[in-house]
Amino acid sequence: MGLTARLVYVGTSTESFARDHVITGITTLGRCGKIEFPEDAVVYTREPDKTDCGIRLSRNHARIFRKGRKFLLEDVGSLVGTYVNGKKIGKRQPRPWNERYRSKDDEAVRARNQGSVELKSGDVIAFGIEMFNDKYKFRFEYG
Image (cartoon, rainbow, N blue to C red; front, side):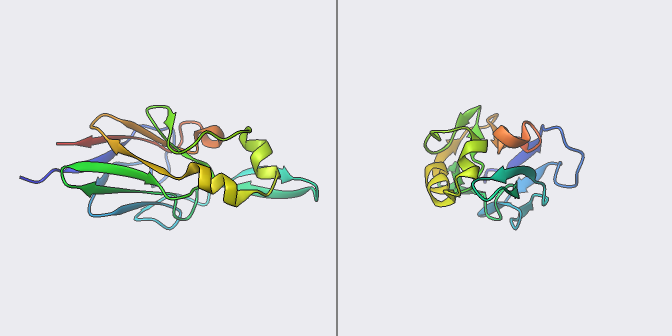
């Protein structure tokens, strides 16, 4: 008997992505993913040129896939990070988000955010919580 997995939306948005999603095969999450997030942005000013930029969820932010009887969540190098039960996947960033993105050091930020974790039924997954709070928040269920 196969496992059925899904993401149950528990965030604060009323947009079209804010619903339950069935996980099939390798399920990508991001602005260009199988589970597609909107072109939402938090605006900040980059130094030293003082240009306004928007930080958003990555085109290819994360993916969920099955390995045997386990499900894994992998941040594939996002800018804004992925969290499971409030704990960040990947390495801790050395500075607050508004300082990180002003520095134009995107590659180092992406590298620190990469990582994966095994998901358990009931785990709460959040994307970019430093910027978006609970907007992109799901509970993982399977059984």
